[in-house]
Image (cartoon, rainbow, N blue to C red; front, top):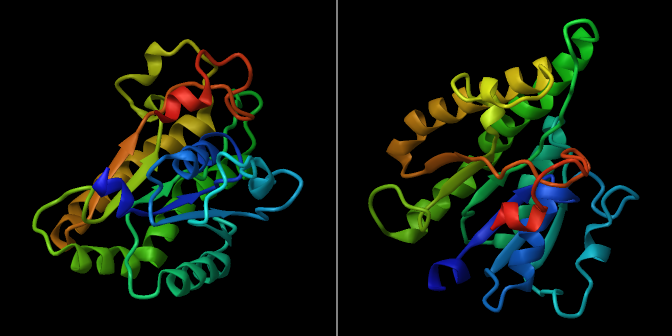
Length: 232
């Protein structure tokens, strides 16, 4: 409870699906974090409508802050960092939940090189750029925590990944090849490993989670689980 209250959590791509759900659950919590920072492209646009989805009286929280950000546009990410930094003032950021993600079901015959590059830009380069730009706020959280070692109560980066990006596990999943998606998530997992090695000396914990195949715009209605259960 106390650790959750102290959170100043940023969730990227928070306008729908797996990105929206943790924002909704945290805002509805009896003990919401001090700050819930929701970053997405056009948060009040026709695809997102984040504020409208969170406006149920039981879920509305004064801790919410919306930061417009295009996760494949460096100036936009930098603008979001400035907005979040100004909002937090002297406080650091913890945790950072990287959720920006696109899926592509291309087979060998339907594969398009530009689509594959776009998938890598969103799933690999974008999350890494977000961490780069928000690093100062993560380091500030470490200093404010006044603790040693790696812990979610100091500073944490969480990448929303998938076992489809695991070379060992992916072939056990009976789905289309999904070349762009699987390759990009594998690359994202390697980026996470590299970040974990580099940032541990700064006291920043880096990890990845597999929320499961859940019913979202990307997961489709064929998915086995609901998005709320996946986030829990």
